[in-house]
Image 1 (cartoon, rainbow, N blue to C red):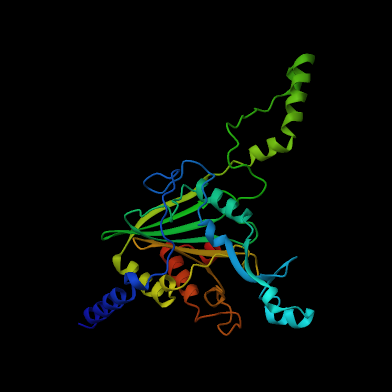
Image 2: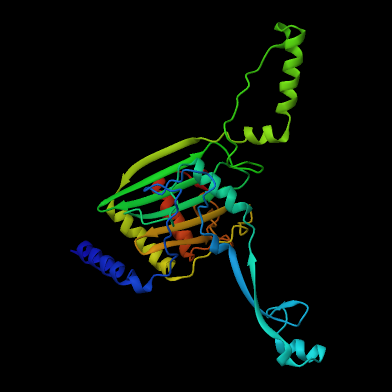
Length: 316
């Protein structure tokens, strides 16, 4: 009886917390290079909405320069430089964050055969956790999808980290087999030297950097109870009721980064997961100062990690 009551409370909590009017999400937009499953046909497609990389700062113009209000208010400027405040025109400045990492991660998702979650509604609910591990370990993506009453957990990992430099559309890659010069005549040896020299060219090195493939691609069914439990954690973190946050330069002290995305009929949402601090479950002293047991996103990470049956070291 207690379990029935608890289940009813959970369902009531979810139905109340996920009403359309409470959602703060990025609206879907149709990307022509994506198929119905959200898989892009070309690696140039951006997997995160580009508008999340643009910030608008209000400021004012003094006739020569634009000043951000965060640097100096219009009133302060007028007082310090003894000018008429009415001559200072209101303006704004659009600042674009570094999009190199956007290109790198998009290329990574493309090589992992992942869907673009903000292109259009995929007729299912999706949560995706991306783990960019420290020390240049291979990236890992864990996706939990719910279609009607079926819930599937998908775990993918690349063979290596995605590094610069790389070309997203290098065209056909020509493989040149190693040749034993001892078995060639003088003319063939000269030709081989020319081939070797061409392979030392920087562009050829970039072409070689296209060697990415999945070393893990597991797909298993999990229970609807697990999905409902994840929804409770997501709601506790106010994931769907807070502004999307994406700062790819934000990393943990060891250089790792966690990104959590959501996809539902109401739109797309994304957050950087801060302060993971998993040490308590690594048999380190429970009172360690940098363990944040109250961080809701840490709880989400821990829950998803348990569903994969991977160890902390494998996913973090």
